[in-house]
Length: 231
Ligand SMILES: CC(C)(COP(=O)(O)OP(=O)(O)OC[C@H]1O[C@@H](n2cnc3c(N)ncnc32)[C@H](O)[C@@H]1OP(=O)(O)O)[C@@H](O)C(=O)NCCC(=O)NCCS
Image (cartoon, rainbow, N blue to C red; front, side, top):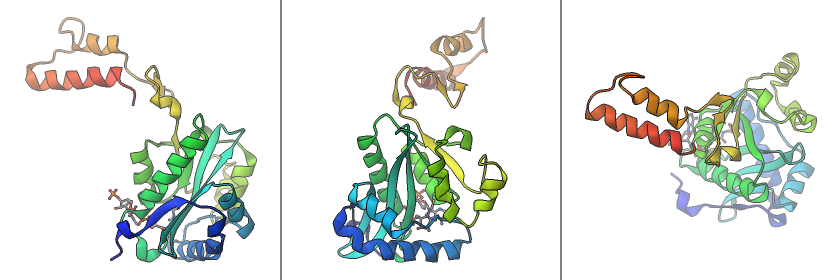
C-alpha cells in the first residue's frame, strides 16, 4: 500500500509537461473502467495550464500519481476545478483529497472573489467537495460561459447535456461561494438563514414553541450560535 507521506502535491509548471501523456492515458483508462465520462483534454491545453501555473500535480519521486487543473470563466466570476485523476495504485489513501485541497487553495489565491465549482458523478469527489465547503447546485447556478461547457464535448455523456439544453446531465454541479464566508451573509442558494430574532422568538415559551430541559437549552445555544456565525 502506498503512503501519502511519500507523495508531494504541488502546483505544476513547465518541468511537468513531460507527464501530460501519463495524465491523459490515466484518464482514458479510468474513463473506460467507469463507463462514465471524464473529459479528456488535449496535450496543448494541459501544457498551457502547466505553463500558467493553473494545475496541480502529485508525484512520488519522479512517478506520476495524480492531477487536477483550474480555469477561470465568465470574466473570472467562476473558477472550475477539473480533470481530477489519481493513478489506480495511489487510490484510497487520501491523495485526491490533497490534490483538491491544493487546487482549492490555488483557486482562492489567484481568484479570491470567484465562485469555485466542479462537475462530478463520483461519491469520492462529492465527499471531498463537501468538506471543502462546496454545495450541490443546479447547472443554472454555474457559469454560462459557452467555452466551459464546450469542454464537456470530450465526455461520453455529452448527448444528455445537449438534449437537456445544458440544464442537466449525469454530473452533479457543486459550488463554493466566497460570499458565504461573510458574517452578514443571509441566504444560501436563495434559502434564507433564520435571523437571530426569529430564533429567539422560537425559544420564547409564550410566543413560540415550548422547549424544556437542559438538553433543549444546549440545542438552543447551538442554534443561536448558528444564527450568528456564518456557514
Ligand atoms: C475519484 C478518485 C479521484 C478518488 O481518488 P482517491 O485518491 O482514491 O480518493 P481519496 O483517497 O482522497 O478519498 C476521498 C474520500 O472519498 C472516498 N472514496 C474514495 N474512493 C471512493 C469510491 N470509489 N467510492 C466512494 N467513496 C470513495 C474515500 O473513502 C474518502 O472519504 P473519507 O474522507 O470519508 O475517508 C479516483 O478514484 C480516480 O482517479 N478515479 C477515476 C477518475 C475520476 O473519477 N475522477 C473524478 C472526476 S470528477
